[in-house]
Structures are given as structure tokens and as C-alpha cells.
Length: 307
Image (tube, rainbow, N blue to C red; front, side, top):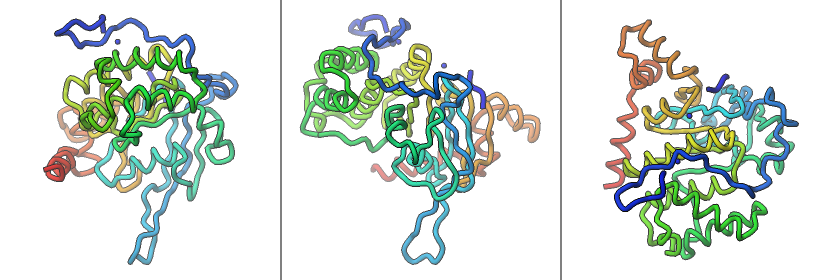
């Protein structure tokens, strides 16, 4: 698959993101082993992967991921779209090593995730909607702890934490408050900052903007684009936001019942749908065509659950 996307210092009313490149002069040494430095080695290779779960009262295991194959080139972004239960979060957990493969193989910059686990862990970081923190500690303390795990010295980590969080629209005064006192949306932005602090070569974003207000969502999306430009980051993104997927992703894979039912660039997928059905060339039409449902149904269900 081929791959082709921060603020002036903040004034009181201006929370936009500075377009100046974001650079970490003393970033974590997490990029050693990028396939020998060859750009021909993909950032991520998912080859015929299958994952089953054994469920009580069911005679046969449930297939969560079925014979999925994907390829992400270095510096690219692939979006994984799917309704709730389609397998997209399971796929992220498989790539990150949180779940074991039943069939197939996964490589990160040429490293097998099962045989070269430690090499892979140095290259990736994951953000999910259920990010865990030491809730009694402050965001700064949480990020400094994470930095130590990746071998980043405290002085560098503190400087980069302030830089990243400012670019994400987080006021510095919030960095000293206990995480448990922050809103869900603010905690999600802190989780993103923690992942970016380690300057990962492969960033796994599992619905990173869920729960964010529109302004915060824009901050995060713009920051993700900047990460690609300034850090040559490769990104896997799952999202319910079709506009977000179209903005950020070079390629999109649509999952339905654990299988890839459509795969290509946003432009190609929209053109296929328009040519085949005469539908308006939107990602919403693409998703409806290949899955038979709208992602709006999932958003409505989640809103009801939160009430």
C-alpha cells in the first residue's frame, strides 16, 4: 500500500496550532532497527492474520479477525474503519502485541512481533480510548514516568512534555493537577501526549479523538499531521469519524465482521462507489455500500450508553 498529512504561541483567544515544525533534539532512542534503514521495508505488514476467541456457551470460537492482510509503507497513515464489533480494536491489539495471533504474521519495520517482541516494543506506541493512568498523580508525573521507561532523561522529558501539551492545547497549569480531576477529553489528550513523547516510529491510534470537543479534536488532528511531517511517523488509525479518516489517511481499510471488505485510498474508494451506484462521492456512501450500515448508528448507541 502506498502512502502520500502546529500554533503561534497561544494568545488568550487563539488556540490554533503553530505550523512550525515540532522537533525533539533529544528524543527517545526508539527508532533503532528500522529495517536496516531501508525504506523498502514496510512500517507494518499484516499477513493473513486470524484471531479467534472462545466464548462461554458457544460451541465454536468466535472469529474476531479473519484472514486480514494489510501493508503500511513508512511515513504513511492507514485508517481502519468499522462498526462496533467489526474487529478494528482487536486488530490494533494484535499489532501492539497485547493479543497473540492464531494464524498469520505481523511485522513492524521487518521485525516479527512474536519472535522479536522487544525490538517491536521500542518502535511502537498505542493510544486508546481506555488509556490507563496513575490517577492520583499529575499529567506531568505520569509522562515523566513513561519517559523513564523509554530511557528519556527527566530534563528532556519535562521540556518535551511542555512542548507537546502546549501544541495539543493543554494549559501548562493543568499539568500539575491530579489526572482524576481532569475531564475525559483532557485525559485523552494527555494519553496522546504520552504516546508522542516517546517519538514512536509506528503510532497506533485507537479512536484517539473519541470524547473530545470539536476544538480539541481539531488540535489532535492537526498535531497528528505535524507528527507525520516532522518525525516521519507511520500511523494506524481507527476512528468512527469518516471525515477524520479522509483528512488524515492515505489508505483506508473497511472492516466488517472481522474481514476487510474494502481497501484503497479515500479517492479511489469514493470513485468506485460513485461509478458503481451513482452515489455521492463521500466516505459515508463508501461505508454504507460495503457494510450496509452507517457509523452514525454506533455514535447514537454510545450516546445512549453515556446517558
